[in-house]
Image (cartoon, rainbow, N blue to C red):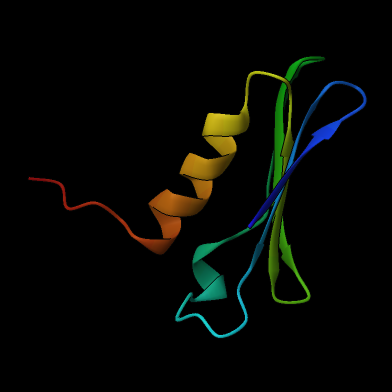
Length: 75
């Protein structure tokens, strides 16, 4: 996993999916632009989950990935 900052500002996350049991069908593209500093963009390219978001959206990016690769049971 690699987490970098963006200049605009924001975050970029990359997670290598090679050698994992991750079904890429559970990681559909997502683009949600709410404001200049509140946005996310997620997709899989070349067996890598790639996501970017605004300065307050790092947790949302990681949650997007985790919720789809290891869904929690809803009791």
